[in-house]
Length: 420
Image (cartoon, rainbow, N blue to C red):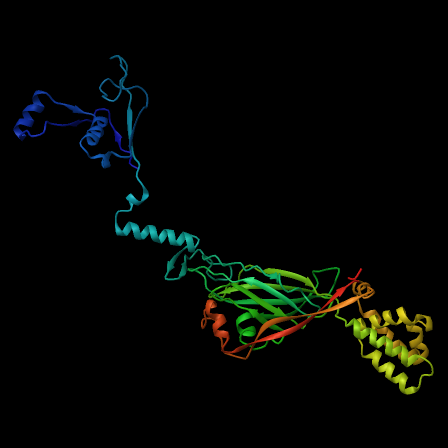
């Protein structure tokens, strides 16, 4: 933008083309020609120099009244009125690329653009990282000018949680310049109070690089999918969980300066314990046969050992089936006390109170189906994987050297009588 101020007395003088200097002097003395600025711009256009005149806008504004000597003002002023100043503003509009006409200006513009794009305008791009300004450091002393990606943790949309296992997923992303994600941290917490989710019991924090894909100490956390050239999804299997329990999982990304990203949380309640309803029916029939008629000491001990080893969920189903088919010969708990005695029966029946009201209600359904599915996972042997020693896009290929793809069988229950 050019904003020259023109005094009303300024003018340009032009002489006819082709005259000698002496002729021009004589011509100027004889008949001087005043060339106003608008006429000058018009002459540029007429002479073929349209590029110089393109984009020029002239604006003459009165800052009071014009003096009679101003050739740009066409206001007749009487001699007794004092002259007032006039401002001629000339503006040249041009594309920004025309203003960048030298290498130094181009370099400065490029540096400013790169800084704004990758370093929040608070640092300089050096190769593929940001050198932050002295004012762009966090309270922890780590550089904070390069925005850190925020990975969002979620439950798998393909594999539903089982009573002992969940599958977690997130998308791996990092900018081309400024931040290099070198690891992810996953924290697992068990909520100990069902009514107050703020009461948690910290169990473990795992490094995805050092603990999971390296095979160092992750018997209960296994990678199911890692980034490759076709997908950026990271899928993680967390097993060894307790049934009917609330867990909270938290994820952070860690960059090459040690800075953590904003956390992302997922809270999930694992389903009720899995039961084999067909087997529970068979055990109910077996107990009836042992209790039917005269019961010897050997039969009583067999019944006691069988029922004591069942665990609470299966014991509930054995009780259900026994009472459904044989209650006319005596209710299950009464038969246990009568055949085994109060002490042994008490040890067995005390297990019935180990379940939540929710799971106890589901175990009263007329039919419980058992479903099996398989999950692919990578069983990794211990290896020295360093944060700077691999590329995320090549991780799938690199893990084939130390990890073996295996299948994990998972059991689920379906509740209710689906035949009706």
